[in-house]
Image (cartoon, rainbow, N blue to C red; front, side, top):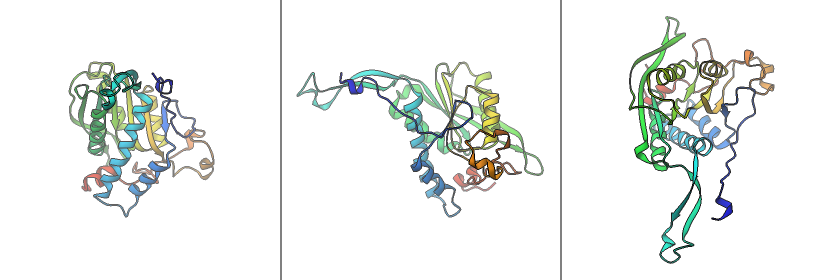
Amino acid sequence: MDSAYRSVNYNLSELEHHYPKNVHILSNPFLLSHLAQLCSPRTFQPTINQLVDALYANLVNIIMNNEFPRKRVAMPTRMGDSHPKEGVFEGELIDSEQSAVSVNLARAGTFPSHICYNALNYVLNPVKVRQDHISINRATDDSNKVVGTNVSGHKIGGPIKDAIVLMPDPMGATGGTLVSALNIYKNEIAGPAKKYIAVHLIVTPEYLRKVTKAHPDLIIYAVRLDRGLSPADVFDTKPGTHWDRERGLNDKQYIVPGGGGFGEILNNSFV
């Protein structure tokens, strides 16, 4: 085995912050550029789906590199007939026998979950990959303020023991959806899972506070942190320094600067 591939290093590029260690806010100009275009009021379908596809395909790549187990393999190449000994690649790869679940948190998470599910099938043994479905949405009062979540049903395909469970949800706003979904898996489904990983485009300080308190084992990945309604002096501090003063949600619990309602723009259905 060539020593260069005996152990493959991967270094995550992320922002420094004072949030819990399981929170990863990526430092990635490519993804930030795509996300900025996605959030633009001048961006419509089908470009919206194309950008979401590119963003989540890259996110699942990053997450598999950083979170999934690896193993050393010896795999024949097409040069094996000419060079039976030398024509074999030996090195460390992602363990294809790791089981994984991608969770569709309908409706904003439907397309992102499909992208993650599809990507997992190309790297892992497809027999050990599945997609679950939870019909869940924010519950609001008469003033459109979020007061909880509504779960109208779910289709979960079996146990999650030792699986890595991905929860792709573009906007981590209040945290209610993720907390409720994790409660279902932890309280109703046979496990335990090896890891729970939330996969977001944008998160707020309020979201991070809620989910890390309710489920401190949750691993969080996000392209961007939005705290646009914070006091001006907070912007000059490392994220999490003044967590109690950071604010990313307006009075209707929409993210600022944000990108509007992703369930609406992804489905072109503004209800």
